[in-house]
Amino acid sequence: MVPCLDRPTAADADLAQPPPPPSTGRLEKANSKTWLPASTRARRRTLSSETDEHFALTVEHVAIFLVGDHTLITVKPSSEDDASIWQAVHRRVASTYSKVRHNDANFLLYSVLDVIVDQMTGVMDDVRSYLMHLEQQLDTLLHRFDIETLRDVHSELGQLPRVIKPTRDVLKSLLASRDLPDTTKAYLRDVHDHLNHILDEIEWQFQMCKSMTEEYRDAKATQTNYVVYVLTIVTTVFLPAQFLTGVYGMNFGISTMVGDWVAYLWMVAAAATFCLLHFVTAPFGRHTSSAWGPTLNNRLGWFVMEVPSLVIMARAWWLFVSDRESNFVWLPFALWTAHYWNRAVVFPLRIKSTPKRMPVVVVAAAIGFNLVNATLNATYLLSTEAMYSSAWLHHPRTLTGLALFLIGMSINVTTDNHLISLRSNGSTGYSIPRGFLFEYVTCANLFGECIEWTGFAIATWNLAGLSFMIWTWANLVPRAASHHAWCVNEFKDYPINRRRIIPFVY
Image (cartoon, rainbow, N blue to C red):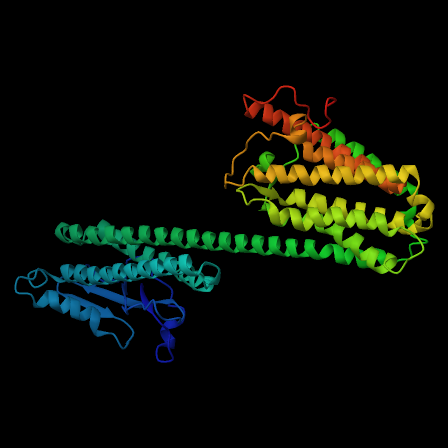
């Protein structure tokens, strides 16, 4: 049995059927010098790499009878390409100095087997070329590569060892026989070695198929991960609207979120975060590392994680506050919206693009925080809107809170501008900020934000505002400590009198 490259058609559909069982390699002696070895025959066709037809290897059965010293009989099924094997043998016989003409039938047996094995080698060369073509296709098409073609090759290659090994076993039996002269055996050993080489080639092609399959699977896995990544981002962007629909579709008068226990639990979570951040450095900016997993562009990250607060408060304002003229509940909504408009839209557009990216896990955590925090504050404001009257607006506590909010926001925006200006020349490195509050603290921008939300809590005077103030300090104070420690280690000339976040205190 021998493999040949073929494209099955209606005319040769019978050849594409499973071949008859290969010989077991056993030699049956008919008389003192008769063997019936199972041999092979390969029909060679050029394997076109430009066609999308089904790949197939076909095999044919060739029976060879060696009778005595002078008679060799071959039997094989008729096919359209019968002449090729015999033409090769005839060329050897026709040569003037042909060894076939000067030796007995034993040498003719070797010649037939040698031609058949040579055709096997040609088939394997064609398969190798076809695999090389598939490898180029895989590199070019990658995700659009037709993996079924590669599976066809792998499946067809799997048939070859059980076709070739019996032929090799027959040759091994011939080499062990005492009825063949040693001179003929020397030639048969060469054929035997060629068969071993073909089996090695098949093993190499198997490994190549396996390697290409793994490469394809890796590419598909990467593509799937990217699709999931994009879908996660899209879902995250639209999550605030979905959350808003669910929450604000309820009656705020009986909402369970109005209960003070939610605010108290939120404060407990802030305390836990404060403790955690003393052991884990929040991966913002210079503290980002690959250990935190997939990352986002900094600008996109800031927008995605801050926009839920903007959307929730703005939507609540539009639905429930915009038509109220009898109280001043709109003022806390306006302050909140102004801050998050700057943080979610203006700030990302102004920061310089740097190689630093933002971990997706940080963005996801911030989205979760903003969904809960904005909803909690909106619920409290709407549930207690009656208290935000003219008397509330003119109360010294409210005026103090509003003043602190405006001062804090002014500090936050001014220091952000100062930090952004440090990279106005296109630099992506870090430098020591100087001037304004940076002469007193390392994280003046974070200090401004803490003052801002402290003022908001004083002005609104409810548990939701208090919980947000506690969260702000619990989150930003440990971050300021980590940032200050990094600056002290990074810059040898860093001012030793600077505090972390609170001037003259901490």
